[in-house]
Amino acid sequence: MDKIKNPKVAEVFNNYPEAIQQKLMQLRQLILDTASETDGVNELEETLKWGEPSYLSKSGSTIRIGWKKSKPKQYGIYFHCRTKLIAKFKKLYGDKFNFEGNRAIVFELCDKLQINELKHCIALSLTYHKI
Image (cartoon, rainbow, N blue to C red; front, side, top):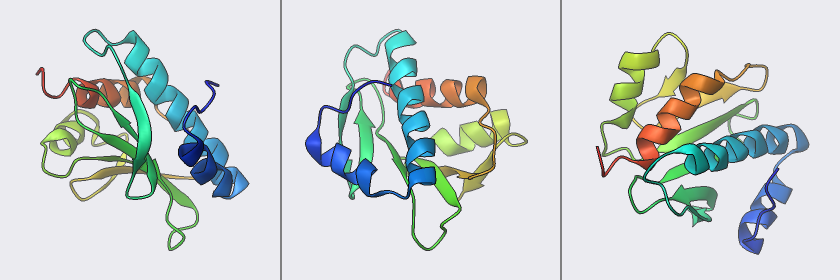
């Protein structure tokens, strides 16, 4: 796992319940790995948006990851709701993921992540402005 450099982001991760923290750290690493493997993504900034870990690339759209106390057994990866990203993801992977409106892919704690499909979605978001 890549070390979290932003202390405010690290604090947010440390405040998640342990099971959620592990799942979100897995999503975080998947985002970082995908960014490093994707042409056109030269830099990735890790920060907080709306109090949640967020990942920004100059060539793409912001990705957030998070968990809500109101749904304790779920966590998600969030995309900008004014893009057509979720609509595209639904066409490509509607049978693989659960979606929340036009903004998120949500997972249950017991779900096995579809790594290749999820990496494709992340890459599309990180390069959104180039597409």
